[in-house]
Length: 206
Image 1 (spheres, rainbow, N blue to C red):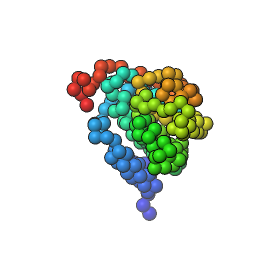
Image 2 (image 1 turned 135 degrees about the vertical axis):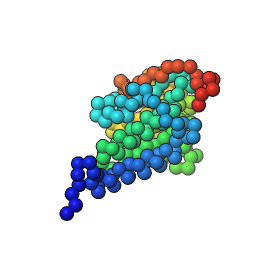
Image 3 (image 1 turned 120 degrees about the horizontal axis):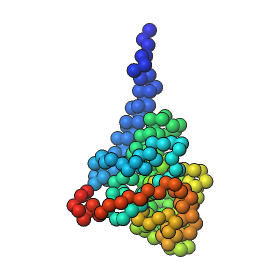
Image 4 (image 1 turned 180 degrees about the vertical axis):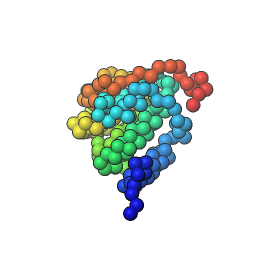
């Protein structure tokens, strides 16, 4: 009878490893071409992606325009996904990725299915929202209500968000409204990372 040595994977481990590699391959296809080049993550981002229990619930990458927040966030999200599958977490951890302008458009009443967008953003394993301050919602409009529904559900369910923005969470009220800004400030407490440096686009870097 064939036995499995300590260095060999069991059939279940082989299946889980194949599933992990397939999930990562599909995620890699979603990464925009400009950001596919692997990079060294800031320690704070790597620690957040790797530390399932000890890290802050959410990560907020802030800094001046062009310092690499989006590139960092894509690869932080990928590392988070890899870790979730390496740890064989129950279910199939998923990531919703949105640029803020695209999400706000999708949440408007005239969108294809704003309720479905809201539900998916509420329940996914990780919500990655890029360049949050790039879009603004009307003070009392439909979009702001849907946005509040998303963050309130994730707040109460303790589901993480990964956000890039050049404005700190506590100063986002003009962008997302007071209630959403309050939720974000609490969700990202202890998980705000300031990225420093010059605008890499002006320097000719990707």
